[in-house]
Structures are given as C-alpha cells and as structure tokens.
Image 1 (cartoon, one colour):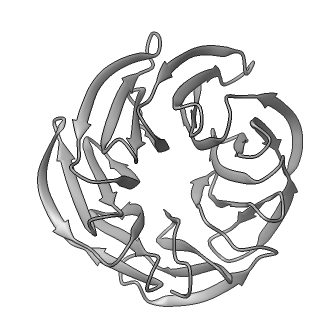
Image 2: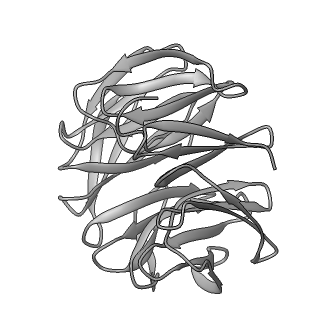
Length: 264
C-alpha cells in the first residue's frame, strides 16, 4: 500500500487505506490497487459516512472528504484532528490537541464544543455521539442534535478507539489496559462488559454481532462473539486498523506498508 499504512474503511466496494502519501484506494474484494489520492498531509485514520471517506489530516488541521472515485473536499477543523464519524448529515471530528469536537456540515465548520482532553476516537449511534478521550481515560456521550454532554464513564487504562453498533452499544479498545470495554447508550451510558484480549487492542471493527480486534503488539486478529474470543488469526506486522467487506476482514500492517485480506 505504501509507507505508513494505517487507517482503513470500505465504501461501495472500495477500500481506502491511509498512507503517508495520502489515501490509497484499492478493490475491497481482491486488494488490487486502483490509485493513490494525494492529500496536503499524511493520513492516519479513515472512516466513512454519507458515501465519502472521512480522513482527518492532523498536520494540516483539516478534514478531507474523499469520494470512492477520488474527488477531494477539504474542510478546516480544530487543532490536530484525529478521528471522525458522521450521521449522514453532519460530520463530528475529534480535535486531539484542542480538546474539542468540530462539527462539519456540507463542507463547512459550523460549530465546536469542548470535550475531555485528547479525544482519540469518535462514533455515532442513534441520537448519541461518543467521544473517547485518551488522556482523561473516559468515554463521553453527547446529544447528536444539541451536542449537550449526556454522560461520562471511565473507559480503562488507555482507551484509544471506539466503534458503535446499531443497537446503541459502544466497543472501546483499551489499548494500554489490554481489553475491550462494552457500554450501552440506551437509555443512558452504562458499562456492560469487559472483554480481555491478552494483548494491546488497537484496530477494531464491527460486523453485525461479530467484533474484530487487531492486537498491535502480538500481530494477531481476534474474532469476538458473544462477549468472548472465539478465534485468533496471525496478521502482518503492527496491525493498526481493521475493516470488513462481505465477510472478508481487511487488516493494515503499518511497519511493512501492506494490506492483508483474511477469509475466516
């Protein structure tokens, strides 16, 4: 994929991989390269919303919205945007060094609200925006429409990323703590379960009721169902991000700049 392969997301059969040179677009089914979209700064994390890839550019203080065909729209954000999530209308960007959540609507920054220090992961489920703050070790929830803070819970010893299910559950990767913390958001934020991973979870993806977690220190991919690890797969070196396409799991390896496809 190229140096620094890290974040990954899939949309319309296209997998987008964040690399130092920009965003590498590949066929999600085969891994065949298509092209590399050049961006003003190196990319790290990628998500998808509204049919576009969301790529926070930390060194440029911008969010790149990239179509599966490679068209780019740049939006100004707060300092050091780290992760982003959308609700189909607006995009919510966690500004790591500004301790803020930037709200983007139709390519414009329309609002910014304070969040706990060093936001590292953002997810949207139902009427809730969830923000994981790395330095504060908490997950916060905000009303998606008003951005009023709803609740705060401890999220472990070193949380980093979060994914959300359609059922309102949040899955928080506690990287330093070696586990995944599960929270419900309906009717309120509540801790449900701790899943021990035996390593450092970093990349995390949800496929229905199946959770995929990459252990960056052990070069392993965990398949989690029913709140427990059911299978383990070897991966490429430093698996930092995970995505799923029609049952195939795509894993990026940062050290070697590669993409791995796993068929469970």
